[in-house]
Each structure stands twice: as structure tokens, then as C-alpha cells.
Length: 537
Image 1 (spheres, helix red, strand yellow):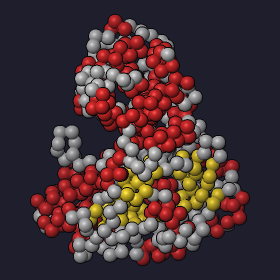
Image 2: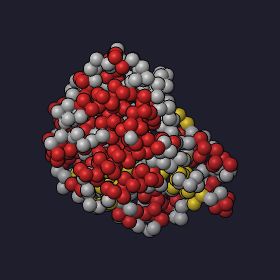
Image 3: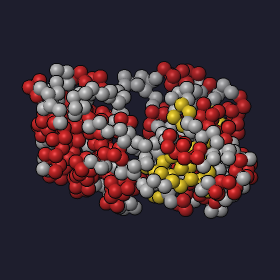
């Protein structure tokens, strides 16, 4: 069986293999979409294909939409050449269930795949053609938070952004310049309305996207490439809106076990590829079942009935509360604790950590026990139900190939939100954060992780983190097994408001974290002993 338009005509074989095929005419939907697209998505990677593509597939199957998605890739063009074109834009979606079973379906809603290359007239003109279509309702994004960044830490534009500013709209290369250039076409076509929707997993994502697009437009105005009316057009949310959203679905890299299963079933050419830009991708996408998408309902040109596919359509304040609930209490803080302790204790699979009594208790203490008294309740989702699903269903799923080493990436950029916000809430509510025990233990674990030595005394490689070299240097001189080498090296880190959002000593827990850390460097097995002492003791 081949995953392409001809291959899926053999419906009996796919059914025998347990794969659900689209209930609609994929070629007809694609043809109608190409005539007059309503929804364009930037960022053609895994979470888009299974989640956003899955939503559109469901709505088309229900008869709620008659058009699919136009997919645009702004960064890794190998994805289009190796994963979209050879498979006629079809996706084999594999849901990994905790009982070891999988649900498999072919998604047919991705109707056209375009490379955002201004230097390729056929691709660039096609995008312009799409953007001047009055019926276009929304463009959405999963390009990661880095895709919105225009400036480096020193406040100056990245060289590739400066080149886009200097070269103007017709030679745009970066994602933000490409989108701004295409919005310029829509402006020139009659100031046509549009919703510009970030679906990236970052706080205030709509605001970040809006800020970057308008900044690019203003720079072009200074250079004389655009007029002031274009900036006004982008700044009027009644015409061009930038709704905020919260997205949540764990979508790991393609799993070898899934590839092997598909081969046994007779599905051909399923091998994953690693592109020239290090994207890990396959003709299939594997992910967990639970998924959440909450979007601010602000669409000046109308929208598909997303709520009929389980999307929560609400106001900006509620989106913000849901995002805060997830990131500061119910999911991300637990993941980070498992990541750093998993690396130190030698784990390579997050799910295996949930079989560890101390680690399972640690995440229970961080979320339901310490987070719940100050959690932000968004009203549309129950924080208790959400965190229970995370702890009981999502993280323990043994068939989710997610590693602590991956999740430990960029921890210095995350701890301020994931722990700092709860710490600040405790200070506000109780005067200090001394009631906390598990969150300080998670922070002590991160500091212990930064030594790059596991609980048996063996060295391991730290995950990528922009602050890692600086933090490691601050901890110089500390030797695991020689507690006397600790001479207060943590103080500068724990008092750094830029890292935690608050001085942890002023919050009343700096010394507590230092003591926990000191105990964790006592020697081999000390980390395990400390977990037992503070969590189960």
C-alpha cells in the first residue's frame, strides 16, 4: 500500500490494515481549495499535520467545511520536497494510546504545499494570488517562538532580518518578512480583512506575532518600500486581527516502533527522514490523543466553525488564563522537574520516570499540591481535571517516545514562568514562599543537573541552553562527592530575577534550595536520597 492519491483508492487494503481513510473526495476538496483558499497555514511540521490538519479533516468529513488547508513552509523546504509532494500531501496520523494500541487515519485536508521563496516566481506569485483573494479568512502559524524573533540579545536586528529590511518586500526571506510582504499585497488589493493567528506554544503568541509584523512594516516604511497606510492597516484589529491562542498536544519525533508497525501492515515508504536543516519528520506523524486548542474569537473576515471540531473559541483574557494554568501549574512545571531529574538519574524516557515512586510523587506535589492553591482557573477547563489527565494519562503513556534530554533544552528560559510565577503568587498570598517544598526541590534538581554529573558520578552532556556556559561557569569548583567545595556558588543564580522573575532569597526559599543542593552533591546516590527525604520522608 502506498500513501498517495492512487494508493488510497485501494480502500479494502487500508481497511484491513486498520487505517481509516478520508470520507470525502480528497481531489475534489483540493481542487476547490486551490480555486479560492480560506485558510493558509505557515509551518508545515508535525504538530500542524496531525492537529491542525486533523481539525480541518474532521470538519470536512462532517460537512462543516468544503475546503482544506493551504500549507506554506518558510524555513525547511526539504519538508515539501520529501514529505508532501511524494505523498500527494496526504498524512498518516498515528495516535499512541496508553494501552499500546494505535489509531491510524489518513488525513486528506492538506490541499496544497507551497515554499515561501520570494526568489521562485512560481511559488511567490502563487502566494500573492492567494493573499489577494477576498475570501481568505485566516492565516495561522506553527513556526516556533524563534520564528517571530527579529532582534538578538543586544537589541539589534539579526543580520538576516536586517537584510530583509534593506532588500524590501519583493526579496523577503525570513518568515516575518514573507508574511508582511504578503499582507502588503492584501492591503494593496483593497485593505481586505484577515485574521492572523499564531498557534505556537508560547505566552501571548498573538501579541508577539503582531509586534514583529508591524515592526517589519515600520522599517520598510522608513526605507520607502511601503506607505504609512499599510502600518495603519496592520494596526487596526477590526481589519487585521492577531488572536491569541493556547495549543497543547505532545507530538514527539517519528518513532521507529510506529514505522516498524506500519511496515508490518504493508504500508510502503514510511521511513523517517532528517532534512538538511535537521528536521526529524516522516510520512506519518505520531502523537498522544489528548489535545487542546483555545483561540480568541476575533475574525474580521469570518472563520470556519472550529468549535465543531473541539476548539475552544473564547475571549483574550480566557486564553491567557488557560495558557497560564498549563504553563505555570498543570503541565510544563511537571515536565521540567522530570527532565532535569531524569537526566541526573539516568532515564531516557519520560514515561519510565512515572514508574519511579519518588518522581511520580514529586510531580504530584508540584502540581496538585503546591500549584493548585494559587492556580489560575480559566473557567472553560478544570485545572484539577487537566492536571489529573497529565499525571494519570499523558505523561505515563509508555508509547510516547519523549526523552528528558529533549525537554531539558533551554531550561534557563523556562524556569521563570514554570516556577517563578507560582513562587510570586505564594509571596503575594502568604508573605513568602516557605510553604513550598517540591518546587524548591525541582529548582535544586536543575542546579544539580547543571553540574553535568549523574547520581552515579558519571558525566553526561547537558541539553542545549543559551545560558548553559554562563551558569556552568558560576558553578565552577563544585565537585560531586565533596560538599566542602560548595562555597555559595549558587547565590548569584538563585537571586537572579532575570532567571526566576524574583529573587528566591527574598521569597524565603533561597537557603532551602542551597541546602537541598548541598545534600544532593554529597556523593553517589545522594540525589535519590534527597528525593526520598523531602518527598516521601
